[in-house]
Image 1 (cartoon, rainbow, N blue to C red):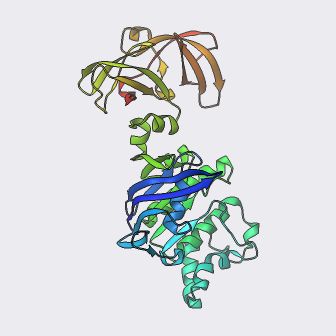
Image 2 (cartoon, one colour; image 1 turned 45 degrees about the horizontal axis):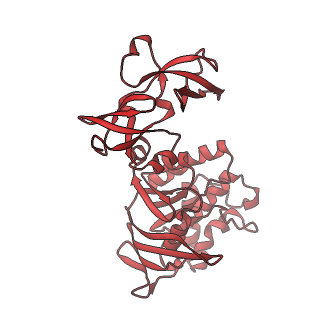
Image 3 (cartoon, one colour; image 1 turned 90 degrees about the vertical axis):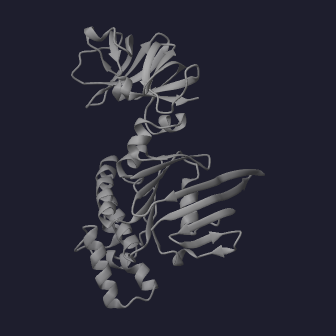
Length: 362
């Protein structure tokens, strides 16, 4: 089920000041895809989710779910949440502590006066899908965090919604359980072939789960793209910096060579992809991720993007060293293989492939 949002506004007033939680947001969420709203806290992503569900009333714009207009201020249309055919999984799961697993999952059907035999059939199907067969009589409070998350998912699925929405559902889990549940959730949603809208401020979660990511800032959509596009070749400095650790180097384009550009900067001449087609003479920012900065071999010292640098700091994290290196007056972050015999204060040669550098307009 496709969702279309046109010119959506949501305003608040705090201490006499107008706050635009949603500032004329327009986007299309394609059917049967996992679409993530990603951004820092306070950017408007949860407000947008709540407006789609109907838990918040916008101040302007329109919302379509499929071909049905469910909200329009101009046309005076407001379809109540319970009539929008949506399922939702909240950050807190909203599990009823006095109910067992069966009753928690069955609740949306019981309130809808579905026949008892049909309820048992649908609950069994939902619990089987989330791999909680045999847990029907288990008290909800006796479940682990991951199991409670699955109960919340089963309850959202049991009424066979057109769309399912998630408001940071993994934020209360510990790191290991979050990673395991993330994989399960991606598998569940892919198998379901259902439209899913997922809200998070966790970039790893967004990259791992999503078919498409919309990055938000200050109530607006900054950029939409698939995870690889957003991570490897984003169009905006804010997105490049927010989606992962990034070294951002200021300079200007001096020459265009096919898909690449020559770039002058404080650390010296550089070569990078120029997908934004920034013309020669224009200022720009070069972005290179820490994982693409590597130790250079002696024969590479005359090749593009190779520099002598000083190791300023080195932290061992198991699978790699996280390091800071200095090239002239510029400090950059990098990752270094844990088998390398390097210490703080060492002078090393580093290189980064031009195909793993990209230019951003200033």
